[in-house]
Length: 124
Figure (cartoon, one colour):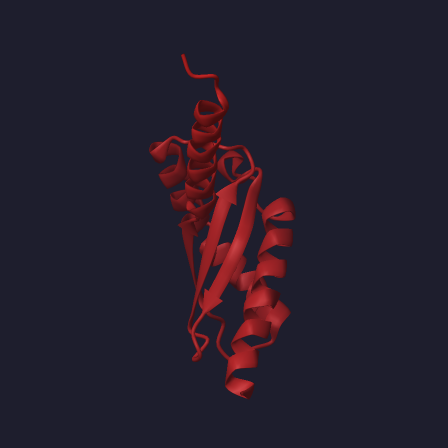
């Protein structure tokens, strides 16, 4: 069971460190308002998949890709600081992905609200 706990602890430490570093070390305007939704890391701790989303809601696919690309370009800077903070023998590679799960939730809620409005409207 220790193998399961260690990746979770490392993932949480990565999430905290990157969230702090995004605000104080990086000055890319595309990364302003970026939020880390989750971090997945394998049992070998070699690659950390970091899922991010913008606090400023954007439905534009091109803007999402630009955010993802900017975060991946900054990965080497973040990884350097992460290595000293975690104290691991090998610092995991950082791969950023835009997390669109909240967008799907918003779409479902909008559809449900529309159905509710239609069903509660008086029929003629």
